[in-house]
Image (tube, rainbow, N blue to C red):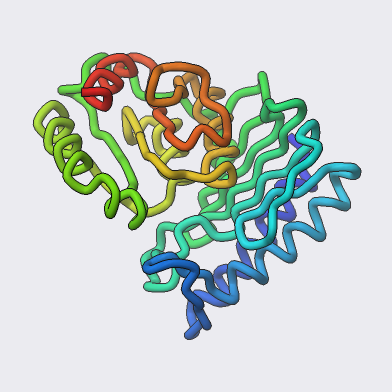
Length: 254
């Protein structure tokens, strides 16, 4: 793991904490999709500092225009995943950064500065939380499992009825479902064994790019809704401990 890479992300976390304890300005990108001045400040800092470390890479980030021509070397940045949580001072939000070479992640970090949770992974070297190696849960059945999900307002508007049906089926077949409002942290909590599975539709590359590597390096499994290889732009992600993957997919595809 590149220690300079980690240091930049931790410093960006200080920007988030500085803004958390005061009123921040927010604008609406959609009906319930907001961006704060802190999102923009964090992103500007991350872009400037990470390009000093990863020379020749392209940036794909949430709050700025993203026109990616050459995808061979890319840094995916979500400067504040869980902006709505942050805006309402609900302390589940994170910075999510992943470095990709030729379509595959090589370095990833997700950092919740409020709880000082620093999740990191390097390809082939495992995943860690504050220096402690992560391992997914060993629960073998959905009925033993706790599942986490998320849904955007756009998905609710288009698929509200089906969404509720799926939530009902999974709730009846498991220990329950949680929604904490940060896909990056959802994936990390699968990696550390808090949740056995996570699924969500409508996510963007910066939402999942880092978490994907952290889950797989912790021994978990990632796919799209069809059980095929998940790409950062697939739109629908399913992440599990691997043991309940097919069972969860079967319900999601009913």
